[in-house]
Image (cartoon, rainbow, N blue to C red; front, side, top):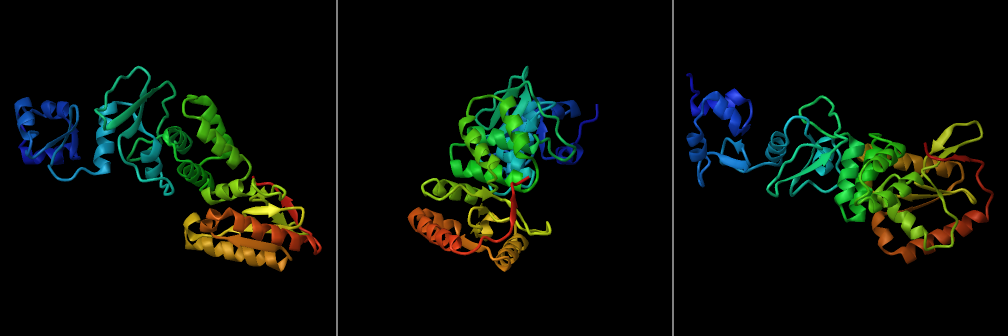
Length: 314
């Protein structure tokens, strides 16, 4: 029987993360595998029966690949790992156990390195290098286990802001899943349902609740007399025609988006809109922010309201 040389194995497998059973099928003796995975040896044991064919640092990609092999056919990544691989940037970088979804009849123990969640609603992953839960499922799986409101707000707002899923799709996914841990994502989804589209806007919404000002329309579309879209401010006080912008490059997707924010402000001011702007850091002093908003709201009420039509966010 042909047995590969040990230095040929990574090339034969096409990856450095492999199942021990696959090495045995290639003809590598179990005794050799055990010897090479000894303390200080050239290979490492990542999970039961899953090896890394070198003894260097273990990357998050190594851990993800090991988790998928451990989960077996049909397993998909979810939570923070899936969100990061989908290109999301606002949630914390994944750490700790890799969150995995497996079929309801599969039993896996992750030795503290994998959180294998059994489900009878196993998502079908899209084609690609990684088997990933879709964005709505991934962000709600993350939100159900996160206890930091700001992180849940940021993650949920980003998938909506980037157009990866709608608030309606998130609510449908939340209703279809487990009720465990759903209180915080449910509250955040109510904010999103009100038009809030970023974590900074959610903080601003919380500040406004302490004021006597009327509730604004979040992310309203402002149209002029001929129906032309003028701008979509963060918050719009329709009674007096005042816009509130939460300005920060941190909460936009890039420099081009921030530049569009400045153009938006100029377009509103050209229509006679009173535009108030604050940095997210200013929200740490809600008294000062509310004082500023109240004064500007009073100023806006003393001049004719701009003839703009405000439509709710889509």
